Length: 261
Ligand SMILES: C[S@@+](CC[C@H](N)C(=O)[O-])C[C@H]1O[C@@H](n2cnc3c(N)ncnc32)[C@H](O)[C@@H]1O
Image (cartoon, rainbow, N blue to C red; front, side):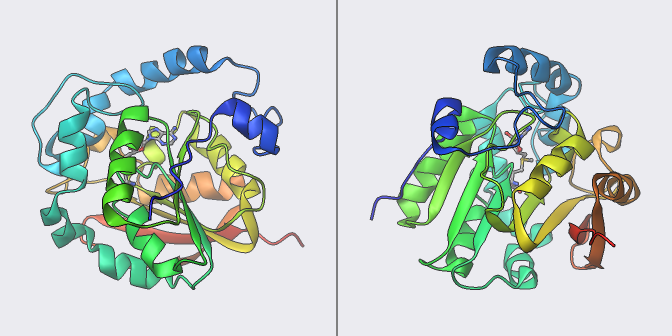
């Protein structure tokens, strides 16, 4: 069956009432998408390849691209989907640890070509949905191809803005962010935006590289360490409810919005 392959664009979102918080949280609501791309490219250029193109995923260095991505997106996609990544990324163990239930909605932010999104889609089953959110159209094209190849009908690609995932409010049981947090232009602001997309009782999971040298991962100066992420999460109103020691090179934090007293 052909998957929905819906790429939500800004006008569609506006028409469906999604992203209701745009304009209320320091985000890019009033900024034209073109201007945002220009602004975000600045972030990406400084070590753009470094984010993922160097030793991070076993590839050579390239010129920096947009959104903190390397310039050679085909090579980048190949590295992200390389079966050898499983040795350290342990995707099956990660999905198992997420304890997803059939029918749940997973929002994978910075989904890339769907390394986790496609696996999560299997875990939530046909009654569930995975919104696979990314800001790079070329990477979403690779994701769409992989969705079609998989035959999965419950993965919905979403073309986001750099500072806004363009998800409806209260729509996600689980928000998953893997190796992506350091790409966001303003981490705490982005987290606050994500919180609005969590259903009551929903969780936000961040998996990212430790702040020290590891055999894979972006250069250390591009990383957001566990301690730094914990500070950002706290500032955004999230509390850490579990820290899983599952992965050799990455921390794995499960958070939820801090209950109001
Ligand atoms: C290192 S890849 C990780 C992909 C995927 N999570 C995985 O583990 O395979 C980071 C992804 O985040 C995307 N990205 C960068 N900035 C973003 C933003 N502001 N919002 C959403 N996605 C973003 C990139 O295009 C890229 O696909």
